[in-house]
Length: 269
Image (cartoon, rainbow, N blue to C red):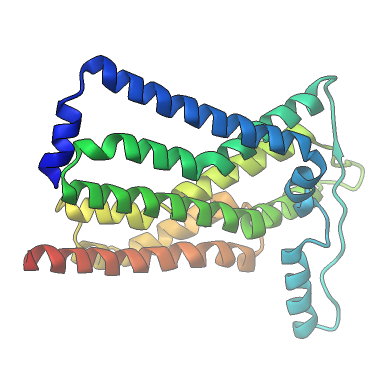
């Protein structure tokens, strides 16, 4: 099979390769533009999702309120975060940026498919299999990290920092740019953090990382995870930090199992 695939690519000239690449890039651009245009048109629906964590009726707040009501007689305190705009063109520019980001996210599965379809003929069968696993695994884990950030990490961070006051005489006035910047930054951090199992699998395939090494440094990893959780959610609430640290710790333990299984499979091969 590989010989047939290689024959298809080897029979093509350099300019024919560029023509195929150009066609793929055009399809990617069209998909991104169409999705971005749809996001731009449905502004109210998009921003209702993006701005939902600023209201105390958001799902994670209601969940914590239910837990607090079971522990004590009263629930958590209600809060209110109002966003402001300080630039004449800021809201329109933010609308464009958000529409572009949402469009790229919506079109990303198709874009990854086109990229993989372009490079796969030049790969051996085992390389195609491993590459497909890495791409799919990386994408799924990154999305999982972003979802966790949106529903847990960012809302808790926003609630703490948005309502924190050094004095009652100082009123918080949070700009839309600050809100969006924090959301994007924390989402990227959590998305990259969730790439840990994929990274460990790659290092194990390269015989760089061993399961025994990860077990020996489990305590050090736990401390590092707590530090990462404290950075991502700079709150004084230990429960909040635990909520963030728990999934990362689960990822570390899962990575140990993945590395051990990879070592077993390599020995059998």
